[in-house]
Amino acid sequence: MMAWVLGLLVTDGHIHNSFHSIFFTQKDERILRLIANYMETDYVLTPFGKTKTAATLIINSEEMKQDLESLGITAKKSLNVPFPKVSEKFLPSFVRGVIDGDGWVGHEGYQVNVTTGSLAFAEGLLAVFQSWGLKSDISTITSQKNHTIYRIWIRGKTSLQILSDRLYKDADSENFHIYKRVYMTQHTDNPYVVDDNRKFPMWKIVDGKIIHTPNTNRVSFRTNISKSVLDALKHDTNVNHLIENGLKNVLVQDKITLDKTDKTTRSDSV
Image (cartoon, rainbow, N blue to C red; front, side):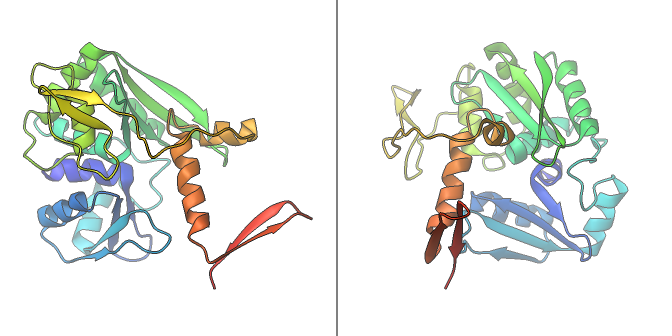
């Protein structure tokens, strides 16, 4: 279980530079409580705030921070975190945590990728995927801060079948993101078939099979946005989600001011 938590931390966690605090942020609060139970340590779970779309788990532990530093996992790790030495026995759990933390799984079950700013981590993860016989490669984009972002891909139904068999073989009934397991296993002989109980379900179960459903709460729209901005935001098919989250953060403000003289928009809480 701790290998799964380590995978989440490496990809989607944060270590405080000055204090002995470790942070996990997830939309699925169930994941945060599960992490806290595994860690068996004092923690704080912050609630959803007015402008927040996810809760944060804060674990305070000097010993844990020192253990992570011994693995090369430190504060400001995003661009240089190494791929840690994980035994073969626990490697599938670690990789499951990596994908749960900063991975994307296509809803049709044909592609998976993991995004990282660390070349060492990208190459280490690619080596694992290749050792498992998966069709995999690395692509790159450049961030707005001119950093290279690496995306490690797994492509093809057969590769995802092999991957899901490894990742979920020893998983218990809770330590995974449900929708990622549903998407990844849908073409296997043993698909993970559960109802989507979210407010806006993206699939339904028909005769024991997953049927993807459109989100009827979404409306198509067109707008003009700078190509350079879109290139910087580009995250496969998730650009719309990034834009939507940005708009939500603006709309929760009490006052929105548009200054046409300098073409800027300002949001203020009053």
